[in-house]
Image (cartoon, rainbow, N blue to C red):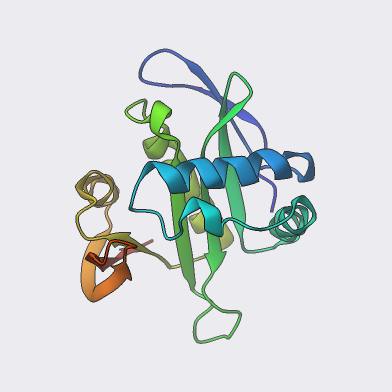
Amino acid sequence: MIFEKKEVVLKNGVSCILRSPLIEDAESMIDYLKTTSAETEFMVRYPEEVTMTIEEEENILKKVIDSKNGIMIAAFIDGELAGNASISCVSERVKLSHRASFGIAVKQKFWGMGIGDILLSEIIGKAKEIGFEQVELTVVENNNKAINLYEKFGFVKCGVIHKAFKLKDGRYYGEVIMIKSL
């Protein structure tokens, strides 16, 4: 599904363009994934685990663009990919098709500008338009900034998977499951 280009003004007065990432954005999407994965322990992967080729990323973007019940919204500042959020159907099976899975990341140099709030607001709006009844996410248990953002938008904690993340240094983090009813 395509998210039509939209300009928003961030908390600091900077202009931000929201739009679907297009096929030609594949290389910058890969770079963005590597960057955000290197900036925090809260991402699901290490940067060296971002191994898709440009062609593979193009196929991922095409699949999202062609989807009837999934959408990706990218935030660009001065042409640079600053953040990204997406929803996708948990399953096409009838019993599960009312549920959307949500993911988001913002490059560290753009933290605190309101990009997360804007992306989350837009994604929730699109989830309602698509007809989802519930949006679900998981977040590392000590990522308080993200948890506070999700709670601000009405997400509630409904469980923890203990030791869900194991870091290279042997430390573990639990993963909090959060849900928002639409």
